[in-house]
Length: 361
Image 1: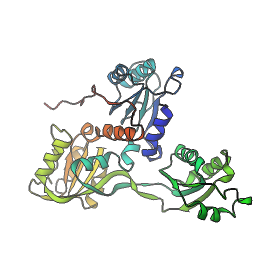
Image 2: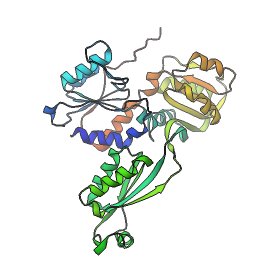
Image 3: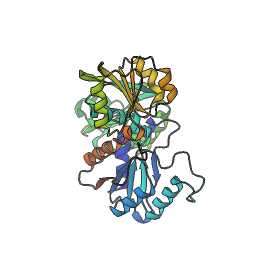
Image 4: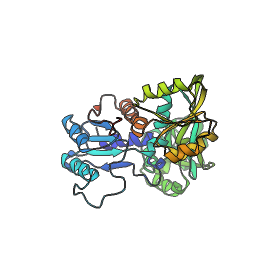
């Protein structure tokens, strides 16, 4: 299996354009030339460490897919002075590629917060903090045999979303006849490729589509949007079909996220009836006010500061800190189902070496 195919599948699901500006999602370490771009197997983890690289080698995997980036703040050397340098060196020596999808996976539809809600049995209502970037809808009509190439060009631009499907060729040909002299598409099966892209990318994308082989048969329409995609972003508001008590939610959190303990605000009431909740995987303290404004009766996240608890001590909304590792370890399940759905017979493994780096004494 080509590494490029796997990366395309990952980035189709969680486009890099969704990552936060401070983040470093994407390919961290590439395959060596002798691998010729072929992937032998995938090991899934939350954090990449030398032990994870060694496990990948034992399992015959030359690709590690992680949630947290291996290279985050940048490296000035690879001299083994810290865990990142040691792990990068181990990956390079072993010929193991590393790909990380961090806040891109956090913000995509079906990402971390969606998976957290699913585990609790709650249904998504809306994103807590939607993506706010100038976006447009790019609608591309092209011959069916060109649709995959068109789609890859759009995905390579970090399209926020990209779908394609067959359309009524007769009607489309009639509509396009004025755009193409001699009606070059009169008997050609057509596809429509719909992508949501950054407005700043439109000119370059249009040029790339025109320059591709057969580009003269591609028609592009641009539809302005309001600049906010309310389906993608950080955090999620969700509801239970039937209200549950505060104590039932606490028990669910401990069970579904394997929490040794849960930190809770003074707003926690074991007898309260809860139906609307907000969630954010990882460090989500900055969204407490948004969660309260959404009408959530409970907010579930991690890395909540003491001062955040203190400032919200009188709030009726319960705040639960279930732990960073515990809230994001579900990334491995997301990766697994995504890759297996795309490549059913390919070898994908959950890391068995990865453990919670914190002890609760």
